[in-house]
Length: 623
Image 1: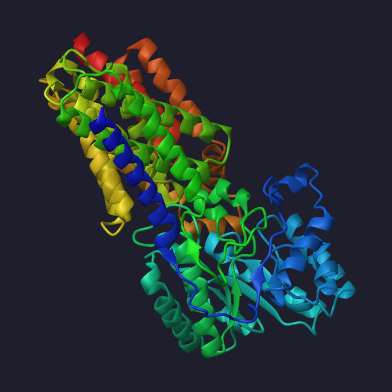
Image 2: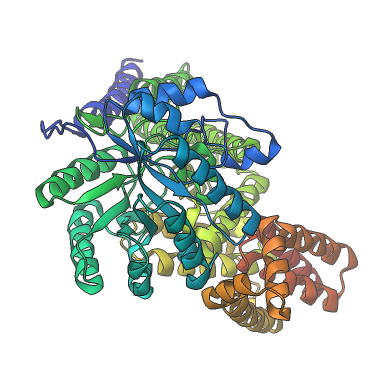
């Protein structure tokens, strides 16, 4: 009993020191690098349950909230940047009240009516609040998105300049697109570039980011031949997935902002920080990371970006409580058990590690889950983790060898891993690496199945799934590079599940005909995607004149992708392939599942592929 109590105490102590280190010791200390005020900050007035997409559904922003926001921001900056005018008409009123200038944005796009409403609203606001408007930004990254041609964008800019000759007018885009469209400099009063090291095509680590920004700023000035440049967006996210070695975190965000402002003040650069407040609505289109660029959180609480000590886990006491509760509750299993010291030690080690992994996964899901569907996903994964956690501890305590884990648990975990790996491989830009819970699952299955793999009696279906997992893992590793620690860990997790699924005497070569079809389909679909769906030149041409067949097809395909219709169709065909058990139909279903997956309807596409894989195995056994 003394040994058990002592080891439980050590587990509890380890938990407490782990979270104390992350919460209180592994922090960014305030280096007293204070600055008076930021030059300018991007401001979107939306609360945590609001979105600009709700304007069409009758959303009216509350003026008292805008007033509170701008009163708060006036303590930290003298200027705000907005991106639209329609629906945000109250902002200049309160900007004037709190002596804030505005870089007033006009949202122009391929929707000509919307663009016209934006410009008309701008003219009205400019006549009402001329003293507030520091400059006007006509268009935000429309050339990057291919929303407008340079010619059409130029027309909008010249119209605004003619209507408001006393106000400086510019256009904002990522720095590369200014270099691709240097003539834009001739029609704007100054150049506005976005430099976001996290989002670069070659992402920059926090250590390299400021030097990269400085190099870009010098390069743009040299190539465009002007020093009249505004860094219109720069910043760093506090949460979200890593891109190569560019890791979002509260500490990294504070580091970046503090170092950038210091450099900008030394160089006398004009700049605007993105952004004032976290915007949860951006997570729909940009993943979890999109909602965490704010200097303040969604509840307007200070994230200590400007000054003060910064911790990546300011809520570490709550997390420590969860971990401690898991350890203590599971330690009750040790009561009245006659066990060797070796088993008690093994139990305590596993209990401690699994408690920490499960808590870290709970914390991640708390951050990244943005709707009921993702909450349900989190509940399923965490429930499975709890089950395996408990099962492993029970197995350690038992001296018999007949405690075999139900295959359904492994199948469920494998399907979850396959869905995530497919998301990461084909739509990974905004997907998260859910590594903590799946490390727990991988370790749990290795321990419970070790020496018993042959008892699983896996066949062709499992080998097909394993092969697809390996392909997904390689694609993800290639996309993320070995610089991404989270991607590397996920690669190892995937290998564990693929290796277990590969157990069995069946040869994967029995489905070589279907492997051939898969390779051919994947090549054709990828060519179709690159040639039609993601072709920026075609996108710009279609925005100018969408009457052609290719433009009509592209528009229809984007609708099917955006609304998830491809995934639904793939799922229906996957189910039918099981029911019909017909070779030609199964090949068609295989094509459609790959089509949906490669064209980023990955969730339902991956489920459809699982169903089709099972259909293929049935057809082979049927011969």
